[in-house]
Image 1 (cartoon, rainbow, N blue to C red):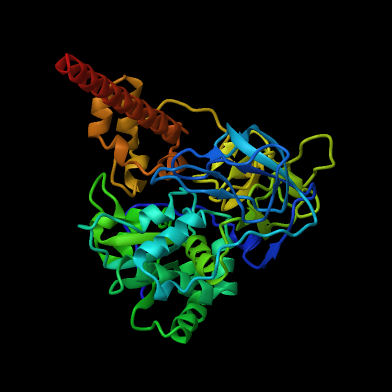
Image 2 (image 1 turned 120 degrees about the vertical axis):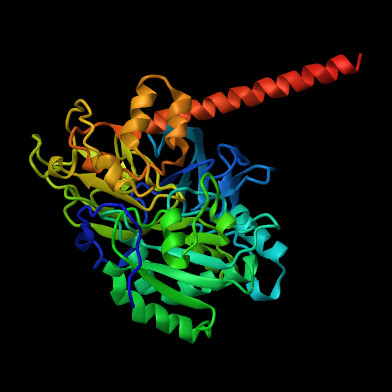
Length: 468
């Protein structure tokens, strides 16, 4: 099978060998306490439980009424101890519900439901009730993604099995250990979006050894006519939506559009497994698999934990950092903690943050593995242009942002940047390209919000004037 690919991209050292032989092991936080963010994808939720209240595993503890809201469930049976702002991924703080687990074993699960015997509306309702969001990092509500506008005909349902971020291997292990669940989840998604759509598992060729396992699972499920596996070359950022679609289908997602505009729906490996569990076992999204790795980790692991588990609560029983008992820093000490992988993850101030629905891994890096160098002047070498898979000019975008020329930066493709980090990775001057582009995008979004607010205020004033 010939591996497909895209133009541009980079080949960072993978470090997959640190953890890809480690089975996914279920573990529980040592403190028997979880800190569950009130919102983990979609519109902001509000707590629906109070301090001192006893809750069951699987019980909804936060929710909202809007179309974009996605409920949050308790991942343990226990008592609500606090509701307060806590450190979360991206180094911000957000409202969290802190629950101390008990030994009661109370569960509030959904009824088992055959997805192939119910309507599309009932399937989408089940997915929303289970609180399922994209588990690759974006955390977009699955019930919204799987319900594209009626004029968008879905021809392909793709599973993003590239897992191109260095260090992370939890998706790889999931496909090895539970290929039938991956195929079942994909079949359910096909049933929901378009029964005539083709399902494709898009797999990087560094995981080609999984091909027999996946093809056997497809055959055993009787889906050989509708589901296949597509090998793509191992290259970063192969897992980006635009490149998954172009490599697997030959189609292009138009600028500023979504995969549905190219007739595609894309789900992560963990997401389709969660969808299968929601129907087959009535299980809400209350646990997830993730990789703990990096050069500073003594023995990297793949684990499955309750959502809300504080990462530091897993030390030292589940994993241990090298030189953690040494007073002075050494070459093996952790100098950077990342929620996710090193290319698109978020650097954290500490490991005292909870595993959320979109947490695919936590990476502890040594100084040798990081790029902790001072930024210098751009030398206009063009390295970032040659490696940009989106065919943009990152240096020109940043130059215009520095000058305050927002509209000019937009014309160079500011809002088309997928923030993969390839440009910063190859920049010899170590210019903080991605950070500056993210700030620029934030300015654009703020400007759009202000314009929308002004238009709404003007419309309200005109309406009030007309009513006199």
